[in-house]
Image 1 (tube, rainbow, N blue to C red):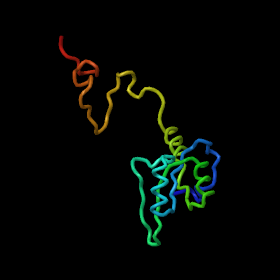
Image 2: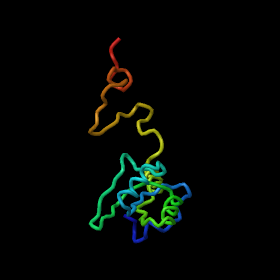
Image 3: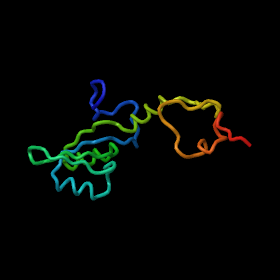
Image 4: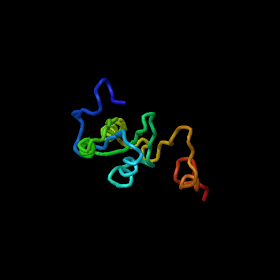
Length: 132
């Protein structure tokens, strides 16, 4: 999952000290349980652990590079899959700036529809005013 031929384990120019990384650890079920129960690492919405043929398993966690280095120092085999924070920064940069609805003068377009809220009561969206 590292991009463009560069291993994710190497630091890039955009990396910052507090960036969060998606990390895949190779651990036993007992090690996985201890890591998750420690509360020191983010498991996302729930822990993801998958057994491998050799009796170890793969545990996915989110952590800083310093935390990953600390685990490596304890002899835990891991792979930094991606820099989630850097990815978020690049995606946020894609967002436009300004008011795409022109202060309420432009109607949102697309397949969605508004359920509940001010527009359903009329008067807040052009063309939906209630007669007096």
